[in-house]
Length: 159
Image (cartoon, rainbow, N blue to C red; front, side):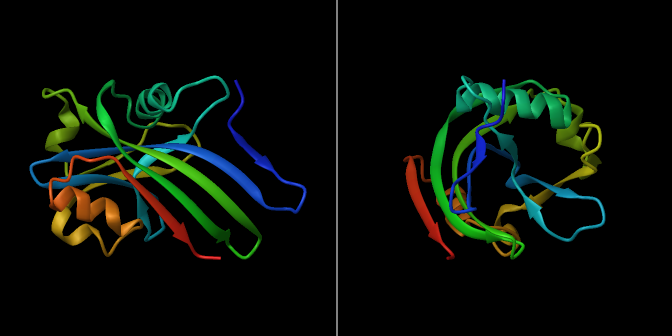
């Protein structure tokens, strides 16, 4: 299977991603890269002929070594942005509310390293009320804070 990520004739890139939102005791799990100060939700590209739901289960297994329970689709985000001044990106992301097994040791650790080889991932629990300044889209945190269970379509145009 190949990631649904490709260059378009105009030099821009199209990406289809899946994202997992894990909340525990009013904290949300975010991922970062060692040595960097930015954080985001765990997830990754969807492979060809893989559903977004299957992809988030696979990504969690690859990144944190955990099987997860996918509760529901939470949001669909269309994001139009420039990547590091190199090229424009049209990205569609499926955000799922997911949960770890109640016995998972990761629920008791404030910060831990990811297991995916060569990715230098680190994971940390952030208070939901403080996290919206850390990453986008801000609307995801608003939905979490307001216990909004409707599926939201979010469009972010930064171009």
